[in-house]
Length: 215
Image 1 (cartoon, rainbow, N blue to C red):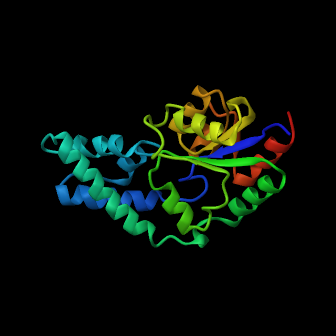
Image 2 (cartoon, rainbow, N blue to C red):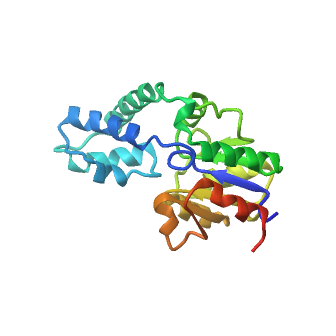
């Protein structure tokens, strides 16, 4: 077996909440009279909440204080959490569920490595809360991707070193974080084409041969 553990980003890999993030940021931007579209939203992928807010506020007509920014980020998150409450197990693709089951049955440890502070809510809503051996998220890190902290902590929770784990990501910042932490990386979606990505995946189950067989 090539890898003893697999660490998954959550959004864009296990499930997709991009549209919910977009709707929440758009609602905030509209209230503030700031232009915001899906192209700008693409820049927020894999970025922390406060850093995302700074991007949203680039087109603002005035400067916001640190206290105001905290309030705005809290407002956005409240809208997002409300939207998350509508997520269901059906929001996770069958290919994803089968892949997770096969990994666990083979004795591979699996973890979430996500910058989101709402990771556990998403996992609970989609019925995956008890599936992973470890969850490293925005609540236990001080530095967001591309810093490798979230993945290093996930590996530590699994009792594994970075060289024993494969990081699966859909964002460049996540691939960069994985490489910075000494992990092998597998990219899906946009990340499949990144030069830093070690393995390109079309579907999540494509990672199974990578994990089970050495190349």
